[in-house]
Image 1: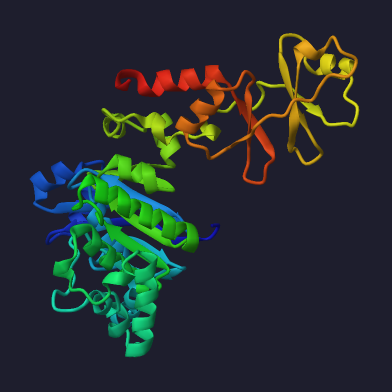
Image 2: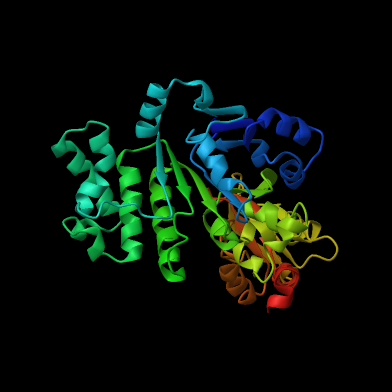
Length: 392
């Protein structure tokens, strides 16, 4: 996930007859509303720059009219930019000829919209294979590829049905399958799940996250729903009045909102649900000891020096071997106690359960099992009080 898949630089879009005048006013500090009242030009997007990394789900979020849908249409050039650049895999989308753009959209970009836009007279399989058909793939091959994708989204048994025979959630799965069948390197999803009821919506988010774990596509996802953005986004860009006001991970945006506009998205939401063990842990709260075949009381006493009651014992690869505690100092060879580790990515609710059941602080480990910090009852209480405040 190193190289950027999409690079957006200084992107602007003004709708109207004299966009240059509007761009000059914006550069001078005028707002979208001032430009409209003085010139009648409508600012869709102004001076937006960001990068989307390979394999991440990058969520564009904002209220209606904030510019997020215009922005993605600039990225796949359904709308022509007034100024700025969009690079996809290093190619400037704004300057490629029309013919190349069509090929780019067919092969490298897929779009999933809020309206399922399925063809009612075609079967689920034929709908899923449609993008491949347009791209000139032979019938046998495209049906085989479409069937594989229908299996991935749980629709294989319904391949011969017509869209009208499916529920809204299932129709949206067909839309997703159609986008995936062309095996795009970039997927653009515009409010893709927002027409669904909350349960179906969560179900589709899970389908997307499961597919993402297997396939690591680059996804640009537009949403106006913070809970959805927090749940699926690797990073989130929040838009207001055609500008990007903040970009960050869900954690960064929760803990450090850029302004009141961003803060307002959290009204009434229990943000603690999106925190993990890595967000709660302290890195230097518990003393550390090197593991050796014979742990003696003096080395434990030296490690615990002062007020600490526990020390974690690590091997040469920083893996946890157990812990020793102060009340063992009376014995000549203090006992090494076994302890359960918590993965850094463990959600808060699981952390609470485990911490409450443990008398000692719990070690937090990376995916490879190496030690990175500890959590105890106090950390958890502090976080719950801070984030749940009025929601408890």
